[in-house]
Image: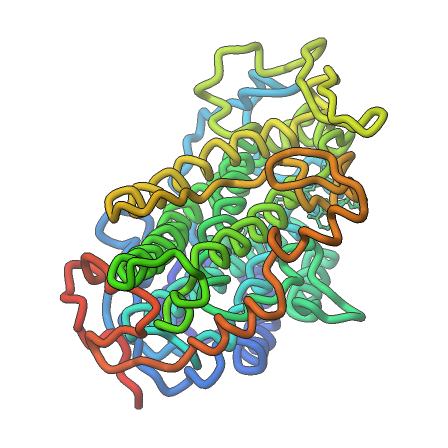
Length: 475
Ligand code: BYC
Ligand code: FE
Ligand code: FE
């Protein structure tokens, strides 16, 4: 008999205490997870007690319990949103049939692949962010970084639960492989491009959590529609945590802009060198970081035409964003969608079968949502009387995936030749000099209520605590 109290050690609503097979699988995996966390998780954080929210159940009282905990003792839980026994599949060829509680044999390979791809991003982001704690601009920001890290860890658990519970031996092998691939590793990299990029500094971190965690929002929303009910329910619960990740990015960039605008007004200058000399990040650098993170993130939606996407949708594995709110037939056969391609050096729109364009549909939904937040950033500049505005680059700018890969495009949407690209690249994407400058600002500021000079304090603390609350106790 096992003596472990599973609901205490691993908070869950999946009846883990009664499920010996699942217990055995998780008992094999969990020590490797802890080793992974120690090896490539948040650098130097083991002894800290951090004011974290922990999910101990899915109801409103239980999903956000705040208190100081050691990161190592964080209780990574396994939660599915409450089920609906009568839930029906509401899109694709199986529309109107009952949602699946088990994996149908014919969709097993595709479902496993989707779950593995989703699962792979979660530990990747923790690896990408592992050094940031050493240069936090405040204790408040350090706490937010760690909150995101433990929750991405929990999202990995969520996908590993599905692999262990529903995919038998190959699921267990995939769960191991999720701990073996490593962000940026030349021999065994993470699956998707953005998750092998560096997150070298806190401006990159805020852009990543604004844009790339938002890919998480859209992909998870599409999976929350899945006919495979356990996937739908687990991704729905993951979405409750994603909001905070995007908030950290949006408010982080806002605070950087606020500080930059203040310095520009004090010095009455828009000269980037003077702004930099005063210890703030010039708007040009912020725009170049934005261009990079936006373009790398929209690549995550895959090729603009994809037979995988058509199969995932028609077989009910992955829906569209807010599938239930759409008023079409939810089958989409015979419908078309506009995608871009280059003909004779010019971008042209062309109609293609909608089912094959569903990656593009989701990318366009993401783009709308991203632009809204950039407009909120511009309000900060507007309020401060600064005329410069941030913009998202053209969809075809700096793309590596799909029909637009390899085309040289200016951020404002002109096809450019190699010479112009080479001449202007340093105005459009972060340069080694930009990275070196931003790195030079990154010093560790962790006294409660103190903030680095390149970022304004937040308006409010976490969970109604004051901004100068002791969010992290260094043991
Ligand atoms: N980089 O037919 P295509 C998150 C591959 S973020 C490298 O378009 P498909 C989070 C593709 O795999 C959310 N490779 O593919 C955020 C395929 O390879 P194979 C993550 C790429 O399947 C922050 C080939 O190119 N979740 O949660 O239609 C922090 C052909 O492409 C890329 C998901 O992505 C790329 N960018 O679409 C923490 C959901 N793009 O098979 C966490 C699950 C494509 O030919 N994934 N390729 O070798 C999916 O739904 C799909 O796999 C994709 C790709 C939408 C990603
Ligand atoms: Fe996540
Ligand atoms: Fe996230």
